[in-house]
Length: 410
Image 1: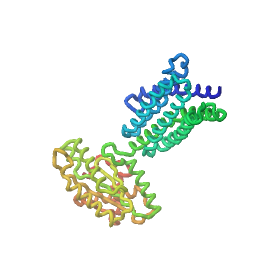
Image 2: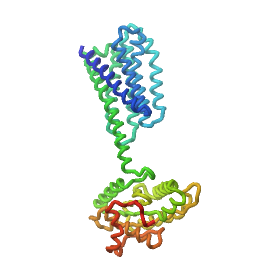
Image 3: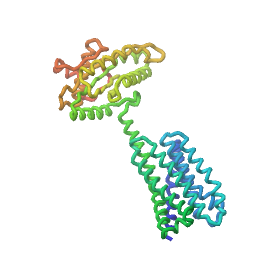
Image 4: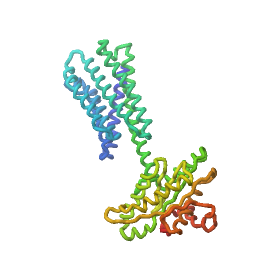
């Protein structure tokens, strides 16, 4: 009686989740992940309907097709996970093969005198499909979704063991799994089924929300045009590198880059061409720097580089190489030959453990002004000679938040 009540509760849960995920899928119909997730619950709902109306259905449906519906629901869930994880379609072919292999046995066993074995065969099919689901979840590599993926896969492994135990009890011990060991196996199965019905949908929503939050965070710190860090991302990266510098003492170089005469390029070729050049410059910088270096767009035609573990002696040839590489590139635009040059201003921590990010940016900005005044297309480092009131006043725009807006230095 208790087991029957638990299974009834499970069917009601499945019907409720089918309605909820149906509404969500209709709102996001272009998203294949949501569509196939709903199809999975529709298969479960069809199984629940067969459970409710079993005595009025033909045996080939109630004891044949009905047994196939739960493995089918996991196969559809695997398709949803395939779209979510962007995996190869080969993983779902395994689920399809399992369904095709077991369906004839379910139909043949539906008229057998001992239908317990038919249900146990269904348990075995569910175990195989659930194992595929767990493996798909573990194949994911996204850090934001790691916790829900591990939760689901861990529980699925427990579920697989329960289903295999039920199949083994029927085929090896020749008994009803729900009546073996004083019904302990049947009770454990019923509890696991209800927990499974609750955990998997909620963990799936958790997984999708975790990715969404990670994507939104990424969008908030990445420049949509050049796909390098924006100002907010730069502030976070600079603070992170300064924290490492204060802890380990490895020098940090901050370089500010401003494209020369960028307004003239926009006037001559249009703002669309300017966007192409900005994207090309960002790509060039990223290709020539180390993976540990940071490229960011401060705004307009200005970029900022963070070179960790690098002092003046090490960073100067790197920046000179970048300056020369930009000067030599003439294919930034596909249908025109343009010479894009840039002025570089840089500053380093130089053992100053208490220096702040805004101070390093200010010093790099002062050095950049000097590079402009000295003729552009060159690299200048902040020196003690720059520490004058007039020079520092040039960089006052950093405090006003005017970076990248109508730069008069071009």
